[in-house]
Image 1 (tube, rainbow, N blue to C red):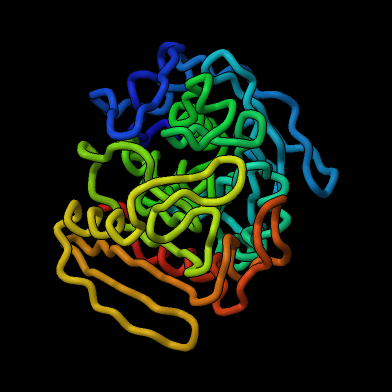
Image 2 (image 1 turned 90 degrees about the vertical axis):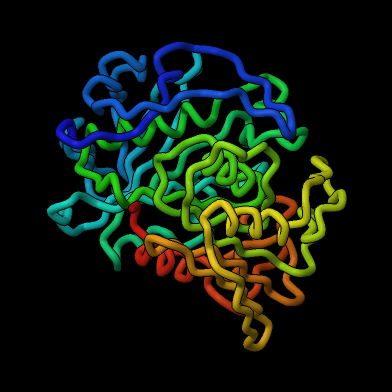
Length: 334
């Protein structure tokens, strides 16, 4: 992987505090640097002993074991944790695709792995899944949404970029096929990644909203999935129930802003059963899509359980995991 360039932010090279304010994002220059340099100077820390879900240790820092392994790295002066699931198939010549799956508020990487079916999808399709853990079970997605990480200005963009760099040092990943998805607070963080990082070929927030300014974002393919009856993160952006009282712009306006940012055509809408879909096709093969499920609450459609405290029972109208992977597979970075 040292021969490939991953685009990461220069801010990786220094610990700093950044307290987000809705509508304000500090300007930054995001150069591409060699992954080897990132690992030498970013302060990611020494690889910790890993454990596998099957009880088999990893075979070394360059070859994580098949199944799920667990690691730590230092980011922003904190020890951060994540799990990596590797399928029992050889990497393609270009490297494995990588999906970063962000849990919701009050959730965890282990909870997301157990509930949303990504391991089975990865085993079938031959890609990696990373399950990072937020600080105190939350992500600093911006605004007032985000518990301790928001109050303390935790730089979760830097952590997730450092995690991707670490994974790329251990196993070959395809830099054109790095994706991010997340639930609720994790979806809010996915939007922040799309706005402030250019690592990702496509993103897929579920039951979240965008709470940071995105004026300087690069074009990216976007799939947003939302329940029409979600009262925690409401489609119209009005304050939600629950501890966070999430408030933001109407989701349709957020998605339309990405359509304009990606220079896409008009939305084409269709409906089937409980699922309504609006799709805009864009130059260079990008797509911006909004899927709304009638009657669905704050949940990950098709999941095996509610997932975490506060989530609603999952809709059976579609499998969000299968739908998102199909979208990701069709949209590499261009």
